[in-house]
Image 1 (cartoon, rainbow, N blue to C red):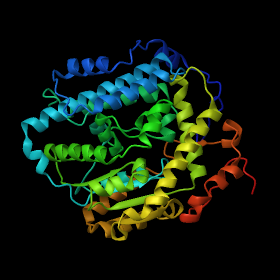
Image 2: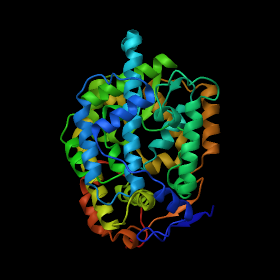
Image 3: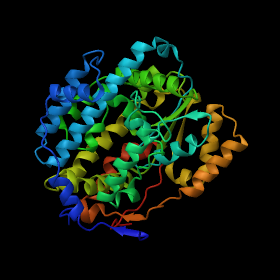
Image 4: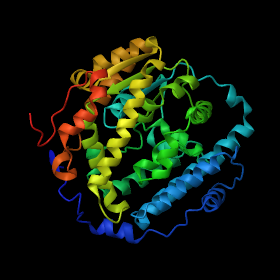
Length: 417
């Protein structure tokens, strides 16, 4: 893999044979609530989904996907499959809770819940912290299938094997993706996945342009869905300790009141980065994946979508930042974090009341050594050339955020000094 990676075909992708085959081989799907639920029942042998309120949200997901006319058959099959996966997990969770009512009594005490913009170092930070064996986390393989089926026995866990195979095939189809966001089965993934079976969160926005869902999500109280994810955390704690958690998700940044209402003892580190740098990274990654998900590439429209979304997220963060008690939260500036990662970790440990044991430090050092920045190559981004963005106007738009948090402004390709 070259050190500098230039993706010069975002607007007019030059598809590989593997990519063409993946698109051509996708089965047709019908975006219907009962079709999703029937597939989940058939795959699990279960039929109790618990409270029925999720059906309305699932229906809105599906209607939003169906309204996205630019999805390829592969894009449609992908989002349909995600809905079936979440519905299957919901069935398995309800079955486990019915058989073990004691799960509901498990305390989730002082979880470390990392918030921050996408592409602002949250994934790296949570993986550093999760190297400490005293902390429970959500590795990718477990978030894909949180509740094991009865037949999921043995070492390695069959869920790990399935995840490794699935994401291995995905990265063979999109080989530049690891340079932007590696999906290693053992690395910690976003705990927002635990809200997926309740059919909430901004998850659909990463796979489609689900306008109706986005508009609903931004006006709905997310507290019940954080409570649902807490039930999932209780179940996962019951299945396997330890009891103290470390998790991360960007949407925590726009849902701070809901987060602290459900987890009043949470420790909340919030990473902050220049939103211009965040956007150039995030939308380039999405555009690269869209070559197999979408029939045509409209890069300015993609940029407009995510500029709007990141602005909404940051305005809510600025508005609600003080919802988290000062003794339970710290703001982490990306440039300071990258300059001294261990000092940042020490700050989090101090706030969380965790002693830095020799074992924890050794594991953290090993993770840092094995996962340097740009491990899989450095992607060269071009917001101006690829997406037609007026950088000066974009910075003015985010002035409210620069005023609140002193992030270093990162110069982007073609920007005038």
